[in-house]
Length: 142
Image 1: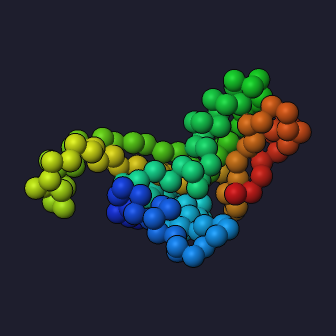
Image 2 (image 1 turned 120 degrees about the horizontal axis):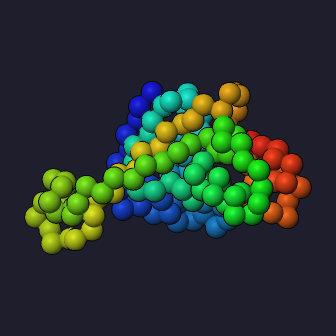
């Protein structure tokens, strides 16, 4: 499965939450993150705004944090996704909606790939060196 979402400039982030919501905000980017977590392994989701605050750390970030904290690493269970970033250049030179503007904002494309973890449910490993779950390398569901 491959999916693309034009969520440029945070349009699906906090800006998409209802103004009268006072406690927990669920945005459209929350839903995109959940969609990625439940996609089949090998699936890709391409966005124009980062989803990391809703996804948690990528497999690379978990591995680096666990190594820094002297915790064992289990690559397949570290995280359920990896991310690649591509800088396409200035918006006014790359996309039609910004062609006549003077904006110097770069268009960054984020490609999230759902990893095969060998289990049905997406999981990650904790990176807190004081956490028993992290020390024992017990994955927790996302």
